[in-house]
Length: 313
Image (cartoon, rainbow, N blue to C red; front, side, top):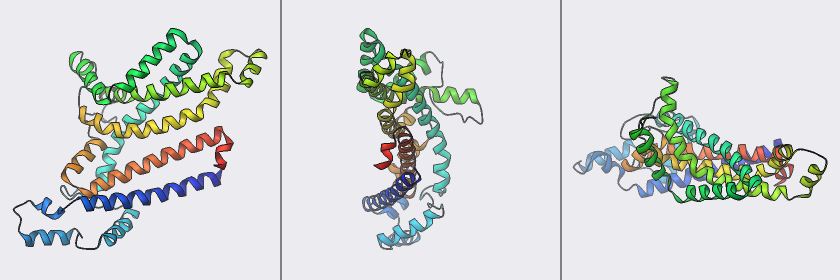
């Protein structure tokens, strides 16, 4: 098991190096005259040249990347070119906001997906049909439309939750719940539709296996067979889908945070990209890459614990 984890960790580190290099090169090649953009069109050529030298843009690209890597290894990802704020501080302050929404949506998605997937597989008929329709609707409607609908109905019309803004949990627990409930629901619906379908299919497949008929012939209750044996076999594919959904939720959070005016990573990424604030954009890219790699590592460990054959892959 330790060798399996070590292989996954080394693969993750290699992936971070590749992602950081590609992001660095693409962002700087597409950035144009960054110094001119920062100073404005009316700045003199001397001022632009001086600014370019201050930012280290006069050095070769590979030299700049190497210097960035050395600084990043010490936790220094540079400063914003526009606000002067440390990139590490900018990302850290907003990462907790985004993760609180994404993790909340992942937990809700996982729990409801298991309930709906098992229910559809066991009951069939009208129940299965209704869940199938819900899944199709969840797939078909874009997340931002669901978010807008939730804002208009439950935030503006009914006033049950905050329509926009964010309250830190350290300030008020009830205020935090009011500000994150609608974003979590908006992110969860599509994920529930996908994972519930996966669990439904896996449970139906597992229920037709010989070992299930053997267990039931021994007098075990159906609930015991399903929740102690069938779900264990169905968990592997479901975990893989859930990991993909978590990554998708990170991307969906970019749009949802804009709709609900939440100061998270999505808002930071959109603003930094529109300004061409490359140090901040790089910080966001690396933060997302690290999160994705950690999630995939945890899923791999969970699957290896459920299925020892995975450790040999």
